Image 1 (cartoon, rainbow, N blue to C red):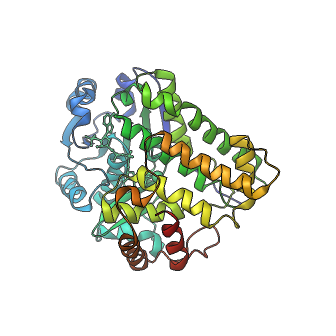
Image 2: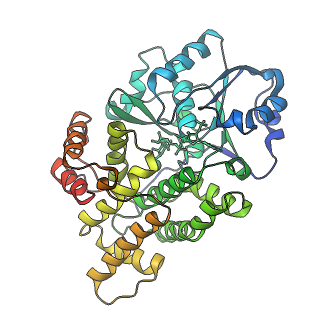
Image 3: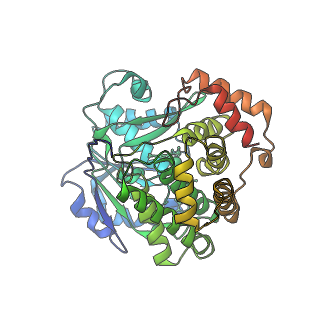
Amino acid sequence: MFNFDYYNPTKIIFGKERLAELRNLIPLNAKVMLLYGGGSVEKFGTLTKIRKVLGESISLEFGGIEPNPQYETLMRAVEIARTKKIDYLLAVGGGSVMDGTKFVALAACYEGDAKDILFAKSRKQVFTSALPFGTIVTLSATGSEMNNGGVISFGDGKYHFAQDVVFPHFSLLDPELTFTLPKRQIANGIIDTFVHVGEQYFTYPAHAMFQDRTAEGMLKSLTELSSKAVEEPKEYDTMANLMWLATLGLNGLIGAGVPQDWTSHMLGHELTALTGMDHGRTLAIVFPAVLKVLREQKRAKLLQYARRVWHIMEADEEQSIDFAILKTEDFFRSLEVPVRLSEYGYGIAEIESILQQLKTHGMNKLSETGLVDLDKCREILTAAI
Ligand code: NZQ
Ligand code: ZN
């Protein structure tokens, strides 16, 4: 196992009917700005409940944060937060609202150009202050509620940032708030979680027994609950399990001390930037192709996955790996999510555009080896046609 630092200060409040506890979670006299998305939280009554609990503590509401949140939209929120001297943010929504809120929290306290936040990773810039914030999660998918990362759309790209000052102060996870999700978003969330776990697992063995077994348990649990989640989205225990899986899938726990490979996410972000496709749906296309093309470097883990997650006991290694990747694709398809670019009408022309974007964004040393260059990316994307 590699050396690692593990830090996660986010307090989780999990379960039914816990919104009333917001009163104790947000500092007295805080000037709160509530941030939300395109209106689902208004439509389904969540905002009304929050307003009732927090009353006059809510100084401002900022709606309209779009899926794959846009820099320009968020900068409007930053301006308002500064002008009105807001000192606490409350995100109510899915990954886009939570990520957007993290960006606002950082930008509101930063005197330089807010775009620095987007480019901080390559420049190794560390931000030391941000407005404190909490989240109320309405979509189980990204894990943003218990991590320090965010993804923001700017120009022709999606930019990932990670700063320790934007771990949420608390996250309130009430599975009932996800009962209104359409099938498509539940499916997206299951796939996103599956791939988060997968990208911390499908590398090479690092003698990390707990991380491996936990990741395998998560992958298996996702396959077990998936059909019920999309068919019966008001079944509490199913949605509760999905919610906790999504949170733990990307809160640092299973990624500690092991190699990671975020190639699928990097390619997926470019695909969203080019086509507007939902995040989870891009991963259903790219992830199986990554496993196919990088099967040699991931051989030992693919075999372990085949045995432990799918109970494939073939003596022939090649066949085991083929079956395991096929099972993965079938799993995504069972959620009515396409697994090929061509199913969306995309092909060579889009691949060339994605490669151009990857080049512009400096994404040419991907994977746990750092050896996945643009040629390898072309191979992966071609396998995804
Ligand atoms: O905007 P509203 O009207 O609220 O509707 C949203 C949106 O249209 C809707 N929705 C959310 N909760 C609902 C609901 N509809 C009905 N009932 C509810 N309870 O769902 C739609 C999608 O919402 P969004 O927040 O965009 O989805 P998701 O949670 O999948 O977030 C995707 C974003 O997160 C980023 C992605 O790149 C993408 O921008 N990610 C963030 C990560 C992180 N911070 O760690 C990691 C991930 O890998 C991912 O990259
Ligand atoms: Zn993701």
